[in-house]
Length: 111
Length: 115
Image (cartoon, rainbow over all chains, first blue to last red; front, side):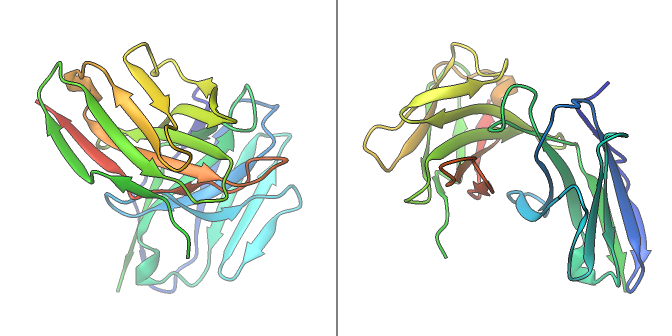
């Protein structure tokens, strides 16, 4: 099983749509969870951390299910500028310092 | 806004040559990292560095790789004898927390092309 697994997409949605991405991770001992965003040929940038109780930041909502080792990201009212690859990231098996990245889910928002 | 800076942005080298990639982390950060991303693939952890020593390294980070913080501001990645498969984007990152690393801030990357 891959350490962090994501649906590669692409998800092709119209502006204003709601879209959800899922991610599973293999290490039950992972403690830190994040969603990063990566634009084409750019560096990853933190979108949001994911907390056990779930958290929201504007149009973005992240959920964590530790029992199922499952993380989700919901984007409401999609904008053209949301087009990017969304990376699910968890801390590694050995310590908190090593982040393991999923392969990413590509989102295309069309006019 | 403070940022991580990397040089060069793009380097082309011949197989077998040594390459040094340079990074200036955010000034008050304590943890430093190198990640790489082969074109079309996922971001992969190479090494983390804390308190002037390597804290973790991946299987990718073999004897051909080394890191150094020579002067308290720069953080370098050296590849001693480059191979074709070293062609990738190399990202430096830093994070600040004293208790836990916290958010990683990435530089814009150095693209390495090995011919």
